[in-house]
Length: 509
Image: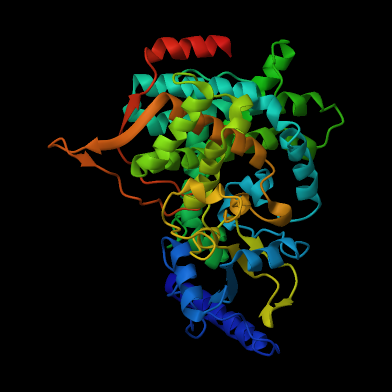
């Protein structure tokens, strides 16, 4: 065959396979959930947007009048749940068949990440064993032991914001990286530009690049077997670099902890605990778990938490009344110029409401991680076949105007009135058996950082060339983990003699 005829042959075989699949599926007695009408063979391939999928899926449901919508792409079924009831009915009440993950080819095959990043695991015995080990380090009774580390990082964040407030986005990511580095590996980060945090950032960038390229591979998985020079298969060459970046961050830090243990200078951490539990008889899987669990904590946790805190700064700039009310509560409870710690949380109800509203208004994962149905099943008279990808449209649920009036406004008070308060948005961290096991740790870190920033600084719009306030847009990045697009603001200290006050607070802690 010539090069051109080989392509034609593969394309023809694919079309015939999809045609047979579609004809067989049409024999089922129950209809698929409603959705946009697709084209023969390719289905709704032309209807799926390249960006901000959650907006489109919410629009489909609103126009169709259904809280569950269906699309089909080249024989692959996609179901989106636009209400909390539908998400709860399927992902929680039927979690036995909706706890699987689709195997994202480029992440599992080319990056090998699906072999050690817990969130990507298919549902099964390996996931259960790793989840149990992860939960042992992140359960609610354990999470408080990390609070001194979080407090130290929060104080460092304030110090960095005082010195170079224009770099606030970088400082926020450094704070999260500092905490994850300490918790996962027991390693203290440098005050700025820490090389270990930089390695994790590079790993994250590699995963993001891989996810972008994975779209075509998930639709045409046979491309994984083609050489890099084949049209559409160029990512095979790039993936070698991505894989190296990801594994360098994981393995380099693991080896550092091994040396620290050998030299009797290691401090308590997830990696130290995992390594200490190994023996000469440990299996390859047990060794991989000892590397993979701390690696997941350090690499994966940075993005979601830092996006939430960047959104907090944006909310404070755009909603000065909410900022003022939060600062008044802090000043009335602690006194002006004093910084909060975890012990103060119970006396700060408005700050707690701000955390709820932040996770609702700017949910870091608008569509959550995809679930996969492992069995054919019927829901409300609709047929959902095995293998269907199921997404909970968290953004749509948390912006439902019936549940949350004026959903696009940042209004923490919606969670304060005992008689009319809105439901707390717990679904931000996932559903059912695949709910994030580190959610208590993440909530602690977000609350502490935003409470300290609010006590120490005032957040104002930046000014344009003519000195007029230039508020940032309320625009977010279109990605699996979504945060505000880069923006500028003015950050002014509220504490008299701020540097000295921060130093005193740090010494007291």
